[in-house]
Image 1 (cartoon, rainbow, N blue to C red):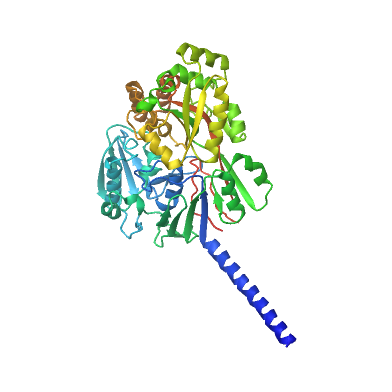
Image 2: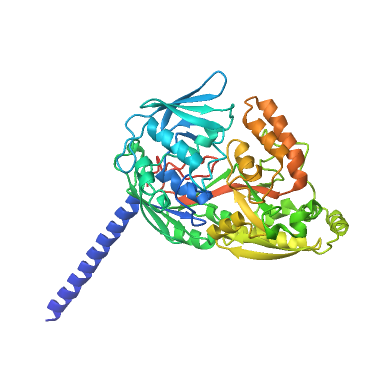
Length: 510
């Protein structure tokens, strides 16, 4: 009997071991088939025409291919368009389209689809792409795989615009069938198709079997998980629940470098971290900070940008006072980085008649935004500012910025290859991302001239003139330019670090 019991117990142990081994194997297989990406926020609308958030662009990188893309050196490279050609007067852009591409609903991608998408971006209510495509007056279908974009004037940023959301192609059939709620079930032409979304929890994409570049895709699913807390995001990577995370907390960089299991990618961004100030959007702009440029100058002078980079970003960035970094050819050298000057700040506040101004500073609930807000709060206090931090869920903060329900806003911008992408939508009158409510006809004229000029030297001159107006006005107080920081399992290969900061799934393998 004892031998029988021992035999049974031994068999049960073997069964459990076998079962555990099989379960582990199944988990390993599942892990190999599913790529799990940790995001710092929950994206806004999953419609390229409406979307504005950087994390939304991460999801679009798997969901929606573009007409063209950029590479590590910011060169324009083919995607859905295989080649392009400008007319001699730079008013017509001819695109040759890739053959054999279908949307994720099986519909054919062709010149008619491009025409539909460009026109949709320009006319859809609430579209954030209208300003980006304003010079495009019409789209001409030459044949099934040739399309011409007709412009009123030369438009230097157009190809860089088409390398982002304005160049993303959605299925005309799906968009027409669901005109008001397309974002709830987007249909594009990328390698993965939409499966489900649970707000604040996850977005699941399935592999599209008929993707034109399917040999570059090595996962069956991509799951995006928004995890606001950087420490929790990293803990999920370490536990194996995630394969790659974006925006690693700068305080975790040193520790990660000593961990053999993970790799760290670090590269400079094209954008900036700044504080957007409500200067003309509704009732909440009617306060000393919003109304008086002297108060905004005092606020800037109360800040030590290098100190902010060291304390809030652990040195992982470059102090900056403009929409591009000092190494960018379009940096306005006549406006160098100002030094902190508390005495001058106090004098400006006294002259403005508000020695102790108070304002609320809205910040998303992510770790980076919170740290920046706290450091700014402490620094500005020395000059007399009383800042109340208003922690707000990421998507909600966009809604408040849209409607003018804020006074100051810690806002990060991922940046664009062309300086127009860091300027036009934020400063041109009534543009979709003009959160300050700023409007100056002279600035509009200069920005439009810069858009219509292909000569680099002339564009630099025009942007210098823009800087001469905007920097003293301070609708946005620029703080620094981040280093993109990703961490990922070393078993994940094919990771590309392109300055727009997006994780491209093509070529990724586990």
